[in-house]
Length: 185
Image 1 (cartoon, rainbow, N blue to C red):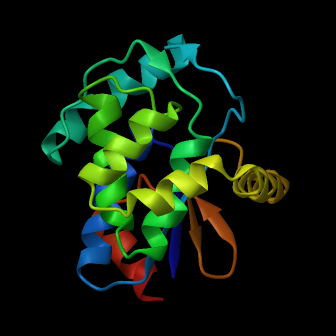
Image 2 (image 1 turned 135 degrees about the vertical axis):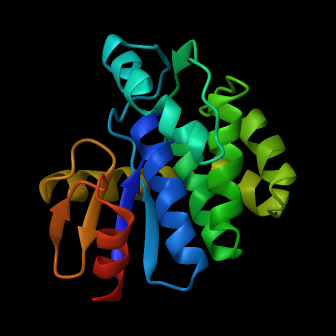
């Protein structure tokens, strides 16, 4: 089993999500877990670190079918990850990830804005009432933040990070054949 920890605002995560989704679509055991590495409730300007990552991964993302445009801001993503839990429960995790990646990297959408997330969830096929309830549930947000703190305690601070069964943390920047072999173990 492979678990990818990712964030929507990371260009490296875009590439990792797209590559690993292909393995998941083939039936290999791959899980996706959203992780907000900043843990803030406010948007920030697009940083130099993000720009360097964008430059490094933009061509590869385009090759995988997701052209990237440089965003103006880096929104807080905890609410988008809360909705990701709803999407997973509804069997629409892949649809939600794709919708968020397109919305952020193509359209510049603020993934920290509840009304925009609800519209995006509707477009992705999610039950909007369930999404709205999750977005209004402070406990859901708090539980997710606690989960992210626990993950930080296990060594996950940035994204993307790939966890191989048994708890080994590695970079997902491996050749496809190696990812496939790891997923099969």
